[in-house]
Image (cartoon, rainbow, N blue to C red; front, side):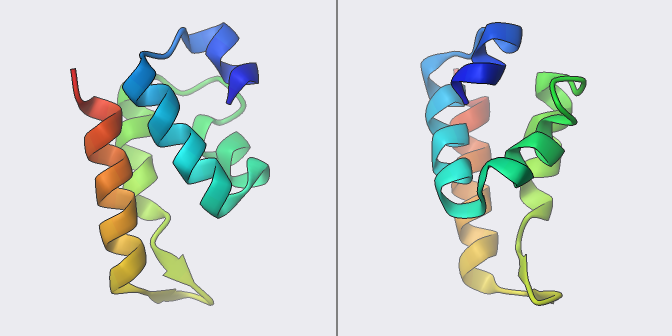
Length: 76
């Protein structure tokens, strides 16, 4: 997350949301989520909600977790 903070200058809430996301999904998925620093913050906030599947199946727990991360990310 620190690597991308140099590009985006995240707020504390954005940083915390992405730390949670990365802890749960891994750095590889953070790279995909940000498109290696090419997505806007708005695009990141929208895409984070899509990481709600395990083995191709949508899981309610992951839906809730991603929603919480999304809400923290967009909180001002």
